[in-house]
Length: 247
Image 1 (cartoon, rainbow, N blue to C red):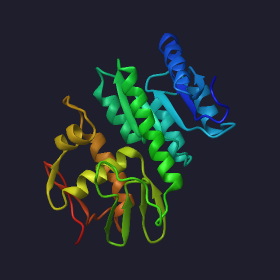
Image 2 (image 1 turned 180 degrees about the vertical axis):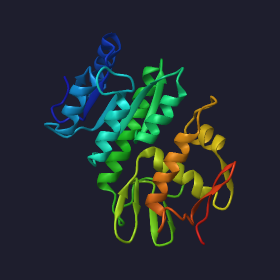
Image 3 (image 1 turned 120 degrees about the vertical axis):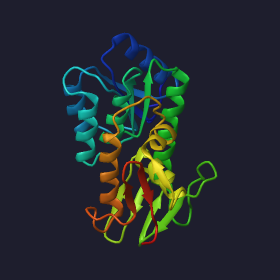
Image 4 (image 1 turned 90 degrees about the vertical axis):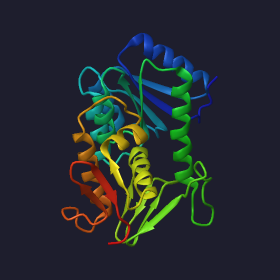
């Protein structure tokens, strides 16, 4: 029997057979579940949930509002619940759209159930660290990598998914934090769009790279004094980008 205080996972999936199988296995893992089968009802529920939601497993293609619309609406409403998007394997552009919209991770259909559960647990673990981390009691190191990166009076906290600037703290999605980590680890080096697709977002097919450019525009709003005249995340015409800590 599921504990009444167990984490609540919201599943938004219109394929009934898949949904029932996922609900059964999520409950077997000890989670409480709530299921929505169309985008409009899911969005209404997620914007005014009756209780705290631990994570959302969200299909990209739904009747009514699609998954990408739901992600954007939640992020615009400053709802930072972790979102694991389910995408069609044959459509890598869905992956980029989900990342650009603000999803934290994605999984292509058909997928291995164990991989979904591992990805979900990873998102929940990040959330737990965010709630408990303090300067005096930092969370565990992530893959032996540095948890913080400081530049230009800003600090990126990769463990708590935050970018701390003098006048505000910005919540990052997992994908935003992963890209910032990738860029800062290669400070001064040119990083191609293909590198980002394959190394950060695990997309290997030839796809339209405009989603990357749009994603970079959003990151510039977080890290630049003047996003229209970037000094840290600069474009290398025809190739990609370079991160510069000091300008």
